[in-house]
Length: 311
Image 1 (cartoon, rainbow, N blue to C red):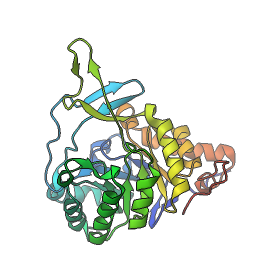
Image 2: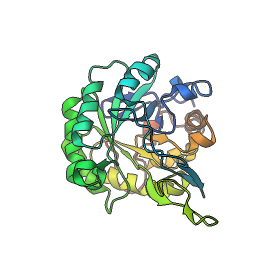
Image 3: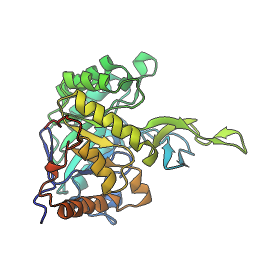
């Protein structure tokens, strides 16, 4: 039996399949274009974008860990102006969803970036990274305070003309609290989880392996945590959810889809296998064919615990 459709819908956003390249792991797309036909993906989430160019943290800023890695890149990026002039023209030629991840250190900065992307052709949605320190609140992370998370969401929605996806931090006691807060603020969808905070030590020098001491843990090691949090959020909100965390093959992706995520993002796996995203797309297609499933919609939210996914 042939698969009729791998198409999925994230609020107002239609995707040709549920596989997205995660922000910070796929550059601006062009870096992978000699290795991957980007047009075959459901979409790409480009590297986190700030108002001005950011050089990021000093090295070393990536450390391999058991079943994953720690990164402390420091959100290095070309800045809004550089993105529009240097990166956007190539992205506008793609036949896939281009999602721009944005971040700011104040609520005003988030709004400024959203406003700068308003009316820009070729961009399907904005993903809002709320795992950033709010300098006006003494370094408190937006994503750990539901009120701040809601205010950021409202500001971006006010300034944007595109669907808004809010990316949640797992470094909270109950992830459903900020999820409900940003849903109430008007977010079109949620993506989760961002990295878990961690560190590593060089036992010879007795120094941190990362120059910044701590960093974000990603990869297969965090998948069970991510899967649990995704399911909890799916049960708590009515807006669609995108699953992130340790997706390395189609079986991992299926776990998230069965749990109710309407799409997945692939991150750390891109460093191990640059073609991981396309392998997952093909793996999903073959699984559906082997199981006699005509549409990926039959899989989404099919976990047998009585909770249905949201459209």
